Length: 173
Picture (cartoon, rainbow, N blue to C red):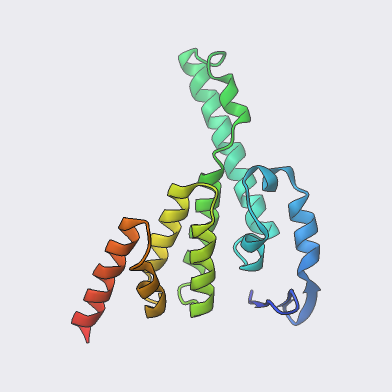
């Protein structure tokens, strides 16, 4: 299935049919799970979150809760840790969605890589957002321009990695 995102019109083509992305926005943004995970419209605009991916994340979350319950029942700590069932590790689900997207898209245009980098930069969890940015730097399709920008990052690990990657690319030439 090929999805072509047209950012100017917020439309995409799915098997030749045009559907307004607004329909996805409304449906997903009203979803309680979507809200709890702290996804923004950027996640939808970039095609990371689709209704299908959201359903996968919900199933995984439910499975993890069931496994925790079984574990706590088995060791007799269900009462002590019952609070855990209402808490969602939102950054874990955002990371999972991000890596699913990258795994499905082995080659991305430079503009998309830059937009994903900005998404990481603005993530509510600084550590997870930094991990997103770092993962993008190590991709073969990471544009040199983004590596140069990352050299000036206030996040030292990004500047250090960007420098390593630039040096390795020079060695290959």
